[in-house]
Amino acid sequence: MPVSPLEAGGRSAVWVVPGTPLESGAGWRIWYSAPHEFEPADVTVTRRGSPVETEQAFELFEPLEGVERRMGVLTVTLPSGSAGGDLYEVAIPEAGRYEWRTLPAALPPEGLTLLFGSCFWRPGDKEGAYSAAIRELTRRFSPIFQILAGDQVYQDYPPVKPVGNMAKVFADRYDDYWGDPGYQEVLRSSPNLFTCDDHEFWNNYPEKQPWLPQTWDGKREEASEAAQDTYHRYQRSANPDGRRYFSFAISPVSFFVSDARSERDDIKDPEHHMFSEEQWAELEDWAETLAGPGVIVLAQPLFDEEGGKTDRSLASFTGDFGRLCTVFERSLTSRDGRAPHDILILTGDIHTGRIATATIAGRPSANVYEFVASPASRVGPFVMKASPKHVPDRFYAIHEGKRSLWEVSDLEFAATIDNNVGLVRISPGTNGRCRFELELWRVRPHDDRSFWQRMRRKGQPQAPFTPIFRKELQLR
Image 1 (tube, rainbow, N blue to C red):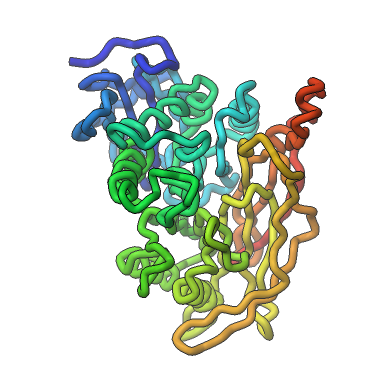
Image 2 (cartoon, rainbow, N blue to C red):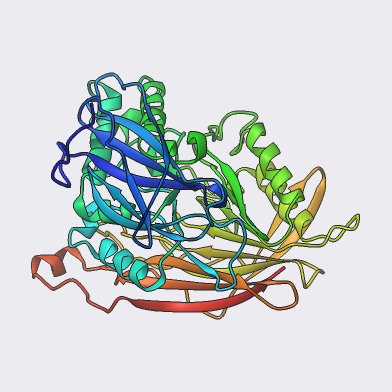
């Protein structure tokens, strides 16, 4: 039987999150969770005040042992021939009324906007600065979707006691985040695309961390299985077919949402990888068949040095890192009558907001651009003063015996450690290109007060919600 509407927020409520919009304007996936077995009430869709007939199919996921909440996904399909990119009013009895856009098959003349962000530590955002920022950006720009690019929940800080049922331990932390009314507003503001990074599991997953008992040899396998199961139930299930990685197009722009974490091997394994071969096959096929600019979502920056035992980077996986750079290099190369196409990376993780470009040495037009939005809410308190993580001046990529040099530079703007969110506007450009406007918006200033400053009740720093920097690119 359908559940009745319940008060928003709290563990006894029904929670609703719009997932990835269906391709070509066909509708949406909508994620639900309730503290018992349930079937959602019918969703009502209208356009410009007129009702729209829909087909609705619900899948309730199998329960997790020890976890009371149940999760499922409702697929709402619009009539065939519905125009993509249109604005619809969506009434969800358990949650309220919302305005969401559908996914267009092609880039509209007026362009479109998307938001993206990463690294949300809920205890640092008790006043709801993140939700206030997303509310204002949604009001101004009506984004077609937002990309949540990893660390949407911190399972490892504050540390948990790995006792009892591990699935319940991980689900309880999700419930703390997903049950927060401010964060619910962020999640419901527009359709969402999800990928993960380490804190959905634990710091530097899947490697052992001495200060986290759930990662020790006797507990790690159970904790990993629980983390994977809860990540699927609370986030991944909202993606197309519940996938870890996927691609879609808004012609001529193509997107690939990758997953470099949940399939990652321990670096100690002789054959360690960050992508499975199945993901490699899809990624390489995506890059080979680009008809315009490619946008790839990575949970960690490509332009980075090798990480250490507590924070492996993509560059730590030397073989896969070289293979990934080669994928980009091939997309930038004109061959066999195929035109070159540019790549834009959207990423997070490093608690720094920045824009940079990497150029293959000796090929001045072979550029890959990287836009980092991180964090939405920084982890604290802070033992040391924070500083932005700058790009390396250069890095080498090695694949199949070939060594290539990539030279990196910041693009005019100083990196920031303020809490932030990224905005991308895509519109038709000139000479067959697409215009990308990249903006980083301050959610709230970074708070680096010392322990003694806090004891003296020195106030949290204040600054307006405002764009930090803006860059325009014309991509092939």
